[in-house]
Length: 261
Image (tube, rainbow, N blue to C red; front, side, top):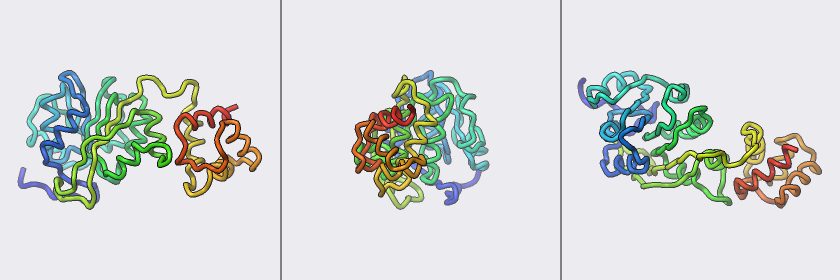
């Protein structure tokens, strides 16, 4: 098997060995003996070792073929399945309902991964992701500091923040600290009778240029004239001078109600 592989910068690889941080991730996921847990990018298997001791089945999805090949030797366990695959192309329908995701995520992957796991036809019940601290805070933001990623993620999940994991606990250390992001899938949709695609068409238009007012963004993004955009906002009870980052999910729902009539 040889010595420890070098982390590949192109894959955003940073190995986490801190036992307390690894344990915190598993605790946040509330892993039970009958759970199926998906680990994304297991790398050298430090988190995998903890997961196989707690879960019924661990599905480790690794893009790096060499690391995937070596993982069963690093973590000998009957309940470990290693899959060489790009997680963004993975078929989540192949997993049992109610599976969980626990993973140390390469920073470059975070935004796309959040979208993929949110929109999956067979979504995880829980996702505990170690991500860049700034990104974790952005996803968990409140109205006033919202973004398209926080609005989208909170639409599908209850979002909370866990332990901060400082850069020096990784090998090699990244340039910034990380934080555990905890996503609990909503048991029922946040809003009834909402077409997700049309809802996010509205949200995407609203956030198109964050420095501009919601009125200007909706007008240009939805091809509305100024009078129509004013009617849309006023019908939802939203001041036309506000910006998208100030809106709550409930206010987006009110806008959607006007937009969809």
